[in-house]
Each structure stands twice: as C-alpha cells, then as structure tokens.
Image 1 (cartoon, one colour):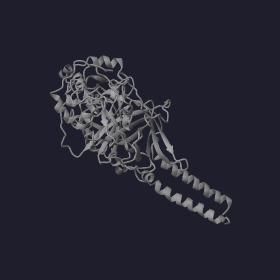
Image 2 (cartoon, one colour):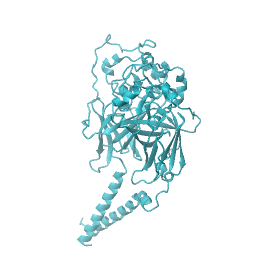
Image 3 (tube, one colour):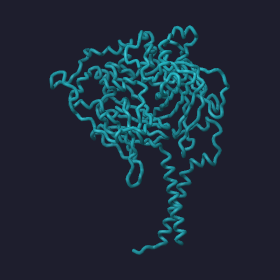
Length: 260
Length: 300
C-alpha cells in the first residue's frame, strides 16, 4: 500500500490537538491555583482535615512512654554528655516542689506521650491541638504570624504551613498534603519523663500526614525531628501515630505530674 | 503542508508530550535510593534484640501470647525454622538500612514497581507492584517477598501485602501466622523517609499492629539491590535431642517474668494485648508500678 502524506499530517495534527486538550485538563489543578485566587485562609487551604479526636497508639518505646522509666535510662536518645549530667540529677520531687511538674509536657516530649489529641481550628489561621495528658494546648500559626515576644513557654512558638504536592491543588478528599510545623522559643523541659533534657535552643520540626486504611480507619503519621545543639549529638528523629476516634468519649484531662 | 509546517507540528507534539509526562511524574515522589535506618526508638529491641517475655506494645491475642511463651531460642537450630525471623514484616522492626529501586517498564518507562531491599538481613526484596496486577489466589504459594500492590494517596505510597509466610512479630518468638496481611505507608519528606506498617493477623493479634520507622537518604549507602534469601541451615548447635522441637510447655518458660520483674511492670502489661496500647491503660498501671531505683541494663 502506498504512503499518503496527508494521512501522516492529519494524524500528527490530530495527536497534537488531543495532547493539547489532555494538557488543558491535566493542568486543571494547576489552573485552579494559578488562575483562581488562592484560598484566603489556612483553614480554607487545608488539603487534609486533621480536626477531631485522635488517640496515640503506644507501640514503639512502650516502656519509656507508658510509664516513667528509671533515672539514667536514656536508651535510643542521642544525648550529649551535658544532657547526661543534667538527667543524672533528675529529681521529680524537686520539680514538683518548684512547680515544674510540666517539664515533660513541652511540645518535644508531649507529642510522644500517652495522650489523646483534640484538634480544632482556633480561627481561620490557627490550628489548635489540645491534649488530655497534662491538659496542654498547642497553637499552630499559619500565614504571617509574628511571635508576640512572650517568654519561652512549654509549647513554644509554632509556625505552620501546608505542603501540597504540585498539580493537585487543595482537595480535602484527596489526602494530598502535609502539615509542616516548626516550633521554637521553647521553655527548657524533658524529652523523656525521667529528666532527659532539651534546651531553650531546641527546634522541633513536625510533618503531619493523614493516611487511610482499608478498613476505613484514619491515622495521623507524625514525624518529629528535634534538634538541640546543647543536649543532642544529632537530631532525634522519631515517628509516632495517632488513630482517629469517633468522638471525645474517652477524653480524660489529667494535670501534669513529675512522676506519673 | 510544507516540510517546515510538518516539523512544527511534530515539535509541538513532542513538547506537549514531554510536558504531560513531566506533570505525571511530578505527581509522585521519588522513593529510590539508599536509605540509612534511624534507630532512635526501641533501639535495643531493633538491634541487639528484645528481652524474652517483653511483648510490650504488641496487641497480642491469647493465642499469640501462648505461642510466644512456648518459644525457645533453640528453635532456630532447626533447619525448617532457621528463617522464621526473616519474613516480610521484618522491615517493621529490623535495624537494617534499605535500598528502594524504581522498576520501570522497559518499553513505556512507566513505574511497574517499587522494590525494597534490605542488606545483611537475609531478606528477600519486597516489590510493591504499581501496574494494577491482581493478587494471586489465596491458595497460591507464600514467599519471603509476599505479594504487594500499591497506589499513591497524595504523596504517600500505600501498599497492601498478602501471601506472607508464617513468621514473627518480634525477635523473641512472638508469632505471626500465614493468614496475616500488611499495609505499608511510605512517606518521604526531603531526605527523610518513614515507613508505617499496619499488620493484621486474625490468629495472633487482637487488632492491627501499627509500627513506624524512619530512614535518612544516604548517597554513600551500599545496600545491594538483591539479597540472598535466608538459607535454611543450622545456625546453632542443637541443644537437645534430634527429632524434637525446642519449646516450653505452658507455665514452664523460665523467662516468663524476667523482663517484667526487671522493670517493675505487672506481668500482664509486659505480655501485651490491645488494651495495653492506649492511654487509659495507665490507670491500671498507676498503683502497680514504681519507678525502678536505677536503670538495670541497656541504658544508653
């Protein structure tokens, strides 16, 4: 059969047209982000919905998280000699007497604690995380929030942003996005209940991902990176996970304790 | 149509196709590379090994606990049990670094699978098939790789594994049956990778066992892409008569209480169970636990 040039030309042109249409639709998600106005608030831009009640599943480091370990038990934490010196002097009775019973409830220790979380929007640009363990409140600030310059606190200053995969836009149903949080200006406290310290120069970075299971369960997979030039030889990097609960029926606020 | 016009159309088509492919690829995360394990939780359990009788953090069923307490390390001396520690789920509690490869279709270039290999652990590589192939019949052979299909959910690669071999959940004899399945979630943030697994076993676990571990990208890593699968051979001298399976009968395991006593834990807490994993269990522990006077062992 002889070759007909017009057939080739038409085929190429047709392919180009099809590709152009495909590209238009493929780029739709981008277009929403480029052409349309970006969401005005962090709440509107949230690619995943982290709100609700969540419970920590203590399947790693159980012996160090569910109960207070012995003094001198620093296993798994890359402590410096300076940290060992401080931790070897741990005295929970002294902490209680000094009103310092919340030292292990600062953000770097709190997120590995045996706790439930209640996550809500404080306002359109502030995500609030409450814990029943120690009755703590973390405020994650999006946008151009500026620290008021208050003294360092157990929960520090937490700056948050959404990290959304390119090309997918803001779609709460797509589970496509990560909450990234950087926390600094922390009041010195304990990484572990038995006095393993973190200093005022600590920076904690968190990556919050939502994952779905085949049985319909939802989990938060939280990766925590704690950097402390004084008390950690290298960053302490630990993942934790929380399972979604239907409601707050098991919410059980308990105050800080230096020993339990 | 002139030759120039024809060339322009072809060029436009190539540009469009390239752009499309770039968009498609950018919608996934590249997981390939050498990943160094970050063992900053359960370090000794992952590394040197757990204490006998330490089942903390495991949602063990009564059957699982009974089998675990019957375990005798000499079991590993048996040829047919020498590989029982190296089943697919070992990735969830092993200390080893891993290599992840993108397996591409040689013709289309599309991702056929992501393959996870672990060096120095006698483990077979785990391919996570991305091409939509179906799982085999449940009666099909169970291998040390299992059979896993995956899909992207956002930037998370989620795999579902079936056809797992009978093995363990912890290296002190906590069992896993060949009815088990496992979901893997792989999440990358910069040079950090986290793998969370959700293991379901209708026989030995009361509820899904969730565990996570992290890795750091290591350009100097030397994990090979393939590993010799565990060879069934005798690794330990037989400690008893040939023809028997080393074990402890119920109530005779000399280490049933060792770990619990060492750390002042109630025995039932040390022996796991779904209820022990959640914050409310601390109410059960509160009046029955006292802080040990000193760290007894493995303190750093």
